[in-house]
Image 1 (cartoon, helix red, strand yellow):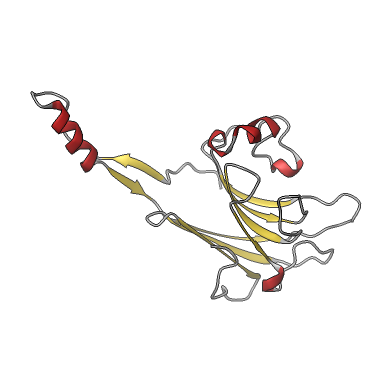
Image 2 (cartoon, helix red, strand yellow):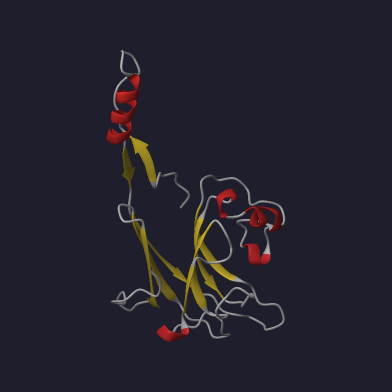
Length: 177
């Protein structure tokens, strides 16, 4: 579902910038300014498996991006349709996205070919977890349906990712936090 929402924004403030003591008012305004945040839960099913070993895909990515713009040129393959070599070289600040990747192909910066990663503005994950420890395999040729729960606590700026075989209850522990 493509619907705009704001994860966090500055709200409030004080004063209108008039009067004799602008410095004191600006300091007060900065103290009064608050950040409004939202939280969300997303639940979806995935079925990622390899049809052939000749040219496997890279996996699947759940992404939060600042716009509905088209992917940048050259963003295929390991760039997940989110970035490219030029943007990646400039660093995460140039790429304004958050992604949870379900990776099925090991790159030099990946722990293995069956992991989940949290990506902040880069295809190099900030944090990863091998799915093998949870008896989950997205890199095999056998099709298995999984349910994924992505939870974001806006106040804590905390992401939790749960994953289990579809039809079973949500696992008590996340595969990635």
